[in-house]
Image (cartoon, rainbow, N blue to C red; front, side, top):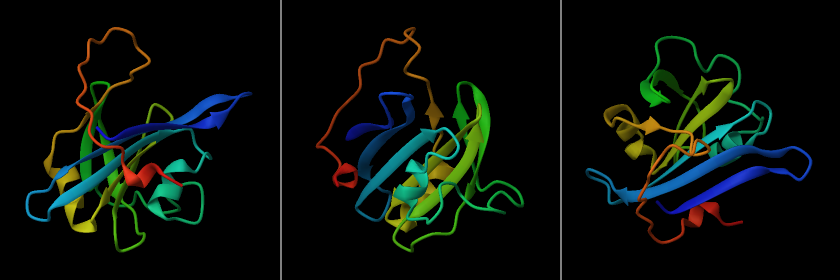
Length: 142
């Protein structure tokens, strides 16, 4: 784990949160993964994805999903989203929130489909976690 972040203000509180992860890929050297959960219209995921609007855009979810992850015990579909060539972008919806998984380099994006990601809501205080931390992600600066 290489970082956490949120987007919001004093009036509305946090409306988006993210976690950054880093590690070796199967064949490509280092890989960065940013996972974002946000309310519609916030735009944090789209910003990391390098998109112009606040969401994945029309038609992103046409056809079968490209990957599935587990969100609070429920399978959640993710679709590839077109964006800059240096990253792989997946987006879907869970519990009324956009879920984004953005991976650098783009070739490492296949790991989203191959791994068994399971997302949990850390606001629930029923979890005893010992999280490994690494160096702070350069993807979160700026």
